[in-house]
Length: 109
Image (cartoon, rainbow, N blue to C red; front, side, top):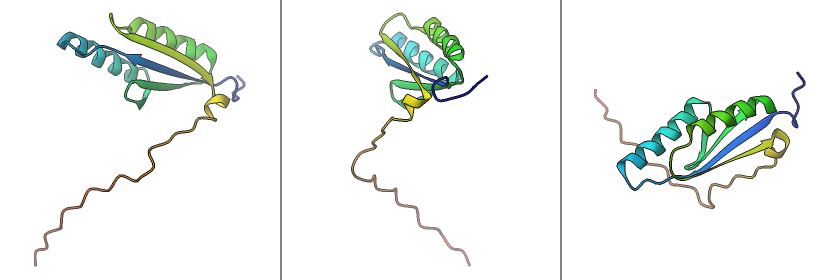
């Protein structure tokens, strides 16, 4: 199989799920956990992504996500090539988050 930047795929799952009731929160948590179990990684809180070696592999994972859909909310799936993914730009804010102070170490003689 020829692995190149146009054959390798990335799947993105975007979702906006309700969390008003205990049952809603359980459904949302279950959906997230199942995505993780299927090899997705959290990119942002409601955005998960997964590398797929081929379009056929992406088909399999898309179908798995469709089977996991909770009863309420919105879920979108986006498929892009590895070449397209190479153009992604990520930003984490302009200022650095201050590091937590380390506790002082107790010295015993």
